[in-house]
Length: 527
Image (cartoon, rainbow, N blue to C red):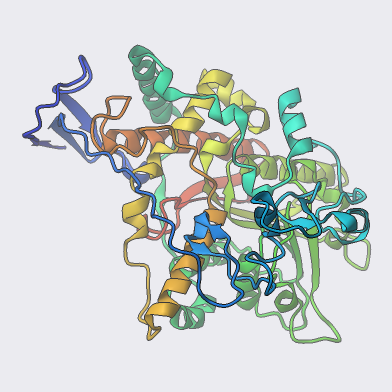
C-alpha cells in the first residue's frame, strides 16, 4: 500500500474553526465501493471554496405576439403556450393575470385533485366528474393497502400519502427535512462515521465492476447524441442475457418504475420475438405522456404482445392478482423483473412485493416463479425505515431507526459534490445538430435527469467543496462515507434476497463517468 503526503496551502487569513480545520487528517479512499488503494495525508485548507449558485435575472417579457408572459423559473424561460389577443397569459396561467387585477373575466382556480393545472370555476363540477386525469378511481383487484410495507406506517406518513397531489413534490417529505446532520455535535458525527466504517467492513462484500453490452443497443447508439442512458440500458441487457433472463420469450417481463417504458422498449428489441409471445407489465404510480406501449405491442396488429399498464403505488401492489401474469391455460407465467434507477424505498417495497409474490406461488407448488431480477439502484436518501425489507439485518448490524435515517441522509454525500463535474463529462456521440437543437436536447436531458433522480435533499453547506463543510471533512472524505452508506443499505437488500432462496449479487454495471448511481442488484434462482 503506497502512502502519499500532500500539503495544501492558502493565502487566506480566515481563522480556522477550533478543532475542525488547520490540522492534518488521514484520508482513506473507497471509490465507488472498491477497497482502499492508497492513504493520503492532507493539511486542511482554511479558505472556503463553496460553490454558490447565482440566480439568473429574469429577462424582459417576450415580444412575440400572443406568447404567454408567465416565466417558468425551472426552465429559465417564458411559457411557450399562446395567449388570447386580449390577455398576457395563456389559459393555464391566466390566474396570474387575475391576481394582479388586470382583467375581469371568468375566474380560473386550481384543480382540487391536482393543483398543477387550473380550470374555469364554472366548469369545476364537470371537470372533477369526467375530465380530470387525477380524479380518484376505483381500486383495481391487485390493490391492497400497504401490503408491501415491512412495518406499520406512521399516521403522519399515511396522512401525507392521502393528501399529496403532485407527484413531482413527493420528494419534499417532512420526515427527511427534519433530519439535520448539521445540527449534530461533532462527537456524534464522528461516532456515526466510525460506526458506518465498521459496518461496511463487516457486512459489505467486495463488489466487482462488469460493464457489458448488448447488440440490440448498437444501432440505437449511432442515432443518438446523448448516449449515457443507452450505455446503462446496454449493460443491463447484457447482464440479463448473461444470467439467462432473456431465454424464455414467453415470460412476463415486469418493469417497475417504468415511466414511458424505455427499458422495456430496448428489451423487446433484445428478445427478438418470433410471434409476439412475450408479456410486458409496466408498473408506475403516475401516468406519463409519450408512452412506448404501442411499440411493445409490436408490428403484428392481428397478434400483438400483451401489454398491461399498472398504475399504482408499489407498496399497495399484490402482484399475484395482476391479470397479465396468467396465460390462456390459467397458469402463471415465469416472471422477469427489471428496473433502471428505482429510487430509494421504491426498491425496498419492490423487493418485498416480489418476495410476497414468490411465497404465494411457492405455496401453490410453483418452485421458481421468478426467473430473474435486475434493478439499477439509486437515491438511497429516500429510503424509509418502515419500508426497508431486512429488519433482521439492521438489528444484527446494530442500526437503530435514528442511525438508519442519518445513514440515508449521509448517503447523498456520495454524489452531491461530484454531480456537476460528472454531468459535464463527455457522454455525447458526434452530432451535426446546430446550437438550437443542441440546447433543446440538453434541456430535455436535464429534465429527464431531474425526473429520474429525486431531489438530493441537501442541507445548507453540503455543496461546499472545501473542508469548511459543517462536518469538518473534505469532499473526498464525505464521498467515501456516502458510498459506504449506500453499500450498507444495498448489502441488506442483497442478504434479504439470499434469505428468500435466491442467488444475488451487487455489480457496478457502468463506469462512474456514465452514472454516479452505477450499482445494480441482480438475482436469479439458486441452481
